[in-house]
Length: 347
Image (cartoon, rainbow, N blue to C red; front, side):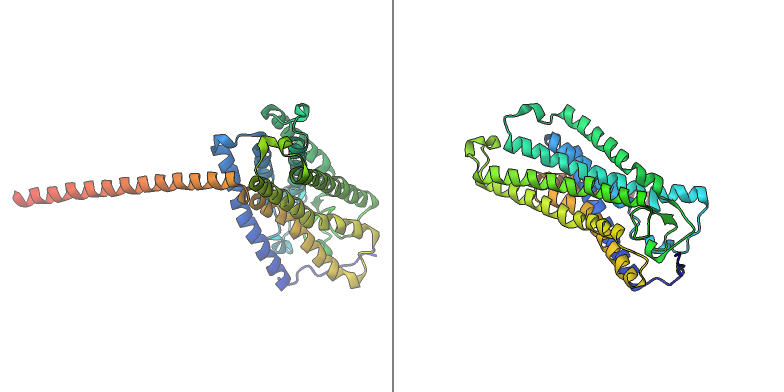
């Protein structure tokens, strides 16, 4: 049975809270990812396969945050779009179709990083699968091809609609990742996508990092790369554990929600409010991963901190040099002006 909703309701407190939270993670997330990209690009010593993967991750997170509709989505309740323009706007901005591509690319990048570190630490003498600069370029291309391919159904299914629902955020876009009563095909896609690109990658990442943890903690010291010190080992363990935990905590609830929705009747009025709130929470957590990643990959790395300090020092020196040049130019102009005045008074 089709139900009609009043989507012209005023902006609620819940809308304001989520818009504010999204604005914060978008602003600081964009800033953090731009810093990571700038540091890797401008630091020759960081032009390594692992850092290229981190750069790719930062690019994906940056795009996801820039295309995130969460901080303005409440304003779409009364937006009217034409069919053609509406489809384009929904696929690129309002409907998360573009975000789905970069999310998949980010998840696949996390997997490649985990596998690369697993091979480098657990299997340090297996050079056949070691990532070189050429191989990492190919890996990044494959990541984006797979991301576009896996998200292609999402791009096709996201379209403009005039049949709005409160469970659809009253958005002008029809999307597969909603709590609307979708077709069997859409339900199959959301569940399969969640398993293949959230649950399965989580298992791979956890396996790789647990194996790395075991190798660093209990493996023979001479088998570790570069004979890492205990302090370096602890730093790496801290980074690896935080990466795995953050990814699972922030992304698995999104997958779990879309395991639940297809198996229940979302048209039940009693469950509408709780379903909508739950969807908004799990979406926010998933977007937060793009905000957290630069903190985990960059803030906990001494190499990134040193590069950031060096970059900041260079910028400060450049600013000081410009300020000094301005001061000298001002003194020179004042000196010339004073001499002109004196010369005129002498005449």
